[in-house]
Amino acid sequence: MIMAGFLIIIFVGACLLMLPFASKAGQETTFLGALFTSVSATCVTGLVVYDTWSHWTVFGQLVLLTEIQIGGLGFITIGTFTMLLLKKKIGLEGRELIHESLNTLQLRGSVKLVKRIVCGTLIFEGTGAILLAVRFIPQMGVVKGIYYGIFHSISAFCNAGFDLMGYREEYSSFSAYVFDPLVVSVLSALILIGGIGFLVWDDIFENRLNWKRYRVQTKVVLTATAVLVAGGTVLFGISESGNLFADMSLGEKFWAALFCAVTPRTAGFNTVDTAALTNGSKILTMIFMFIGGCPGSTAGGIKTTTVVVIILYIKSYLLHTEDCVVFKRRLNQDAIKRASVVVFINFSLALFAILVLLIGQDLPLADVLFEAFSAIGTVGMSTGVTRDLNTVSRLVIMALMFLGRVGSLSFAMSFTEKRRTGGIRYPEEDITVG
Image 1 (cartoon, rainbow, N blue to C red):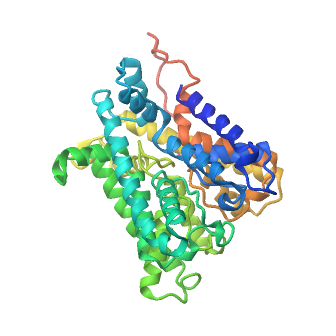
Image 2: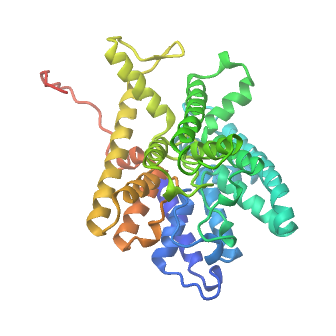
């Protein structure tokens, strides 16, 4: 049902984008182009074949913004909240859908969580819109400044990566604000808040700043996020010190490096030229794109918790300890199995897509690698080859974006029947590995 819902939203959005008044005069919109854009918006990715400001009218932009909001929060969350507003009762099946779509740990409290998610989203996006409008209004005027504040606040919070900065230069994103502390800090905060996950919000709301009472997942998410942001800022600063950051002051390097560390966590914006990054920075960006955000959030990727579980399992195996322990809690074996499967499936999908793209088109390997990992991680960053993709390549990238948003493991398991283990267990035998 969750997959069907996303598909319906995608096709409805594509049809709306095909309407004559959705694109500006003189701009031609093909069905494949509209479908690609709709997939990218609903799956909160940000890869585009048309510059959002140059190609789409305000109507088209609002269609994209609606898809971004629905895709970020999930149509189950929005549908449930709408039913609550209409005083409708949420049955067991509805609660199970919420549990599945938000990736919660338990069924209990799912309706209350939906209320907090919607209210929290309105507060964060509203605050972000006001702060961004403070910067945009003096530059663009009141109406346009407010509109730009709202659009980019929603896009950042939902980790979508769509922007309207093409009025300066097509596909320029936020390069004009690379040294602007207000814009960079607000966008970074929105991206991180949207990407840490709704379960973490709920835990922080319940326990405030009492670290000891947080669930293990909350502690893992906050720790991993802090390490990735801080470590990424330092590594990008070092990697680009002799390249894009060469002529910058220390303060300017900090803001540029900070955004380089935050935006690959599936946000998709950029303040520096992605194509001009060093090879080391591109590899680091791809690693960050593959990791992504956190479970039950607006972000994509394999998720920070997955990486932490894999690292803990490797550590326990090398140290010959029986259990995987984190924050004085033992992880169950199912989490380890799921983490391994998620990493394998996502990496396999990315490699298969890379192979198809390279066979179907003569494109630089580095650009294809970047594009594939950006799509599977629902990031939206690109070195510029998105617009050059042929029909087959675009279909492959669309499939990656869809699987990255719905969840490759959930997608694979939806086609398999739940089977109970029979009474027969075959003899065990060793096999050499490694």
